[in-house]
Figure (cartoon, rainbow, N blue to C red):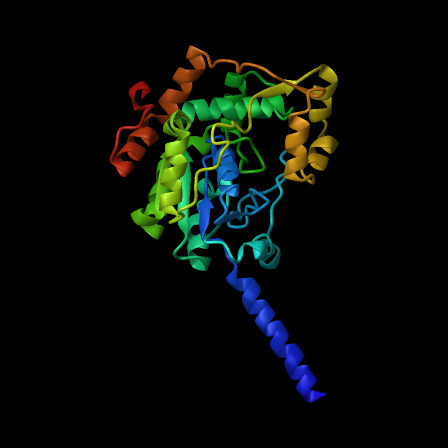
Length: 311
């Protein structure tokens, strides 16, 4: 009996060790609305890479606070987080893509505590167009009802704000401090910084570059030109009113990502259309806000950014 108990004890200890060893070894940390979904989908198709089926678990972002208006799925349990990667133990690279990690100031340190040699990937986008794209997503999804400029001013002036509490249209475009922090903690050799405008202009090159960074020698996925998160709008007012219903929003937060993607692409509910354009007034407003941060980022990276000229 005592021998049997020892065997059971050893079995569970070994099981615990195996489970705890399967931590991700790389992270796509953002930016939000910066092409992370496309990169995530491309890497998912690479044989030597395992991506968490839950794109954004937000495990290392304690400041993410889901609400009925922003029903983000968040994993707080370490065991549940590790379970996301249990099928990736034979892969060379294991990753996830929580964009909150480029916003939450605690994320770099928390990741480093668990995975000190982690590889960090980020895609940085012109903060002005990022904010506008973010707004369009919110408006399309029924979260936002105000015109862009009014939405910016109102959201920026909120006393209580955060990832899951407010939209953070402007705040999510301040990159410099968080980029600096990741570089200091993980080292320049372990941080891959892609520029969104270059990423979409030459996607294949960017993906090849990313695979080299991850030390993966697989071929580039076939559908490298497929665009993810294309712009769709509700087909009619009934669909729009459903999206703006808090109960429906809360329910959407519990649905699998694959089902949400299917619903977005359903032609009975949504129609694909050209994106609206940002006005000169809105662009100027955001340019003034981001000017200093863009200059700081350019200095940190030691390069001129594609959008620097407008600042």
